[in-house]
Length: 360
Ligand code: EPU
Image (tube, rainbow, N blue to C red; front, top):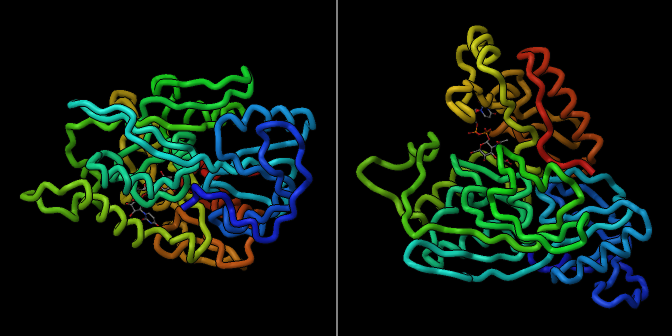
C-alpha cells in the first residue's frame, strides 16, 4: 500500500520553512522502498504531499530555487539514479469514494496516492466491475493515467471520466475530461508534458452494464464458453497470469515491461513476417491503417536474452520484456543491459525498442 507516507527511518529533517501549507522537508530521504527496482536511491529533498492544497506553495518554493524536481508515485515505472538532485514530491493523497451513482453507472473519485491494486479490489468489493483486467498492476492511481496503463485488452483511459491536477503553467487546479487527456497506447498529455501537471485525483466512470472482457488469449483459455465468469473470477485469473509471468517487485526488483511494444507500418510487418513466420503481433489502431504492434518480449526472447544475467541485473526468466535487479543493481547497469538488447533487436529485426519506464 503506497497511500501512506514513506517510513521516515533514516531521515533527517530540515527546520520548518514557515510557509503555510508546506509539509516538512525530508533531507537525504531513502527511496529504496519507493522504487520497484529496489535501487539504492537518496532524494536530496523530499516532501510527502497528502493534500492538493500543499502543491501550490511547494511548487512556488521549488521554482524560487531553480533546482530540478519531479513527482514520485509508487515508483514502479521509473529508473532512478543513486542521488536524485533537487526535490522529489512523494504523492501520498489518500481517499476513495463513490461520488455519484444511478442506474447507468457510478463515478468513483480517488486520491492520486492510493495503491492501484488495492483500489481495483475496493471497486469489486463495492460491486463496481470494470477494472478487473488491470488487477495487480503495481503503482498508484495517480500514475495510472500518465502512461495509460493497460493489460489483457483493457486500458485505464477507457474508464476515466476526468482528472484533477495542478497545472504548473497556469498555477491553478484543472479538471480535464478524459476526451482531453489524449490517451493512446502507453501515453497521455500528462506523459507528453513532463513536469507540467501534478495529478491529485482521478474520477472513474464505471458503467452498471458489464460484460467480462476475455478477448486476450491468455485470459480466454482460462474459461470455458458455457460459463460467464464474474468480475472477481476475472480478477483472480488476471492475478494468476501475472504471477506466472511477471516477477513480484517485493521479491525481485523490476519495473514491469522495460520496453514498449513497437508499432510498425504494415509493409514492415509483412516483410518481417516473411523472415519470421512465428512473429507475435496484434492489429493496432484503425484497421484500415494496417498498423501492427509487435510483441517486443517475443523478439527479445528470440534473440536469446531470456533469463540472461549481466552482473546484478538481468532479463526475467519467464518474460523477456522485463528487466530485473537481482540485488545491488543501479540505473547505469540496467541501462547498459537495455542498450545491448536494443542493439541486438535492431540488428535482427530492424526495429527500435523504446524504453518504457521514465528515466530521471
Ligand atoms: N513472448 C515470448 N517470450 C517472452 C515474452 C513474451 O515469446 O519472453 C510472447 C508471448 O508468448 C506472447 C507475446 O510475446 O505471445 C506477448 O507477451 P505477453 O502476453 O506477456 O504480453 P506483452 O505484450 O509482452 C503487454 C504489456 C504488459 C501487459 C501484457 C498483458 C506492454 C509494454 N506490456 O506485455 O504490461 O501486462 O501485455 O496485456 O504493452 C507493463 O506495462 O509493465 C506490463 C506488464
